Length: 531
Image (cartoon, rainbow, N blue to C red; front, side, top):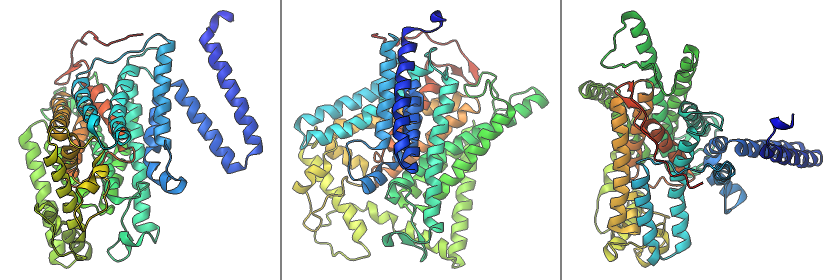
């Protein structure tokens, strides 16, 4: 029997036994709700210690609670999402050191990611506040570390689950489930709760949805990520099932629905599992769409239109077919809105009114001296912050005021009627130009151009249902890019969610496994394993 247990196994068993004893002693003396919370917390910690992927899944699920925790519990160094991610990263690094296997995946993602991080870090040398800059820089470091964690664990035979398909399924399920939970909260806030913050009142009796984000705009952006990822997965599984049926009937491959027997998602799944994934993805896509509509966020709506166009454009392998589908959808959507407005339908009138003033928010110019009233207050406030960001960039075009330092620099550039900083410029591209200068904005653009290029490459080559994941990711990138014209979405742990999505992308593209639905020979590894 002694040969069956290693020294590491014995130490791990002793640690778990000690934790179990301490939790048991605490549970006996605590009230039932607190005891239940302590048991759940201990279980989560143990799962994260056993496998860092479970810690990452937990971080994705509880990450959106950060803003709510700050309101209820007060500001803290770490919220639950950050704590869960820190635990996952510590478990991954500690486990790698213990096994003498700690690898840095040699993925093309590293180049553009590290370039942006390096440019942003250099800008901190002359920043208003280095701590503020480090906080912002940490978000981007976390995103990249999540990608590394997923890629490394996918190729670690000592971990469970093993392999890219299992890792992809686990992270994909966590991403969709986290969004579904927030969407259901938003639906409840909009029409089922019956009350809400007075300034969120819309349509006379409903309240803008905001989930646990405490603000509708970032909540709407988060819903776009969920809706498009879910829609892409649903499209992928629907096309996959259709391809299976077509192959059984004709043994031929359609030019639209390519069937692959080597799918990264499906090799061990039964038909019933495919159907369950399809239903789950449809539920997430539908709930996410309702959530973003109920957020009443014009930025999220504009992002949804852009993402929807991309999703439809790449829903078929032939671009002409996708463009035709997108055109028909645009006509139907626009025609339906026009008919609703013509008929005096209240919700249609409100939506049209909400969208009609969107162009005013892109009117550039000097807003000093403009008369302020209730009708133009929100627009002028946004434009005033854009003007401040432009002035920051004009003063230091090459290094900016420091990454994450817009709010710290704002008092030196504030317009006389707008003394209070909103935290960011409400245009992330102007915000970056002000904070990290032209080189930083260029590095950011190169990063996302690389990511989009990878995603398009996959969307043109993968077979279903993996192609659906790529198409959903591409639509999410489009929605994110457009929403950033009027907001900043690297808040409330959304960057953890984005890290998971970028990890999905790298799992699909890593080492070039696919060539138009056929598996090619894996490329040799160039991973850096210092331990």
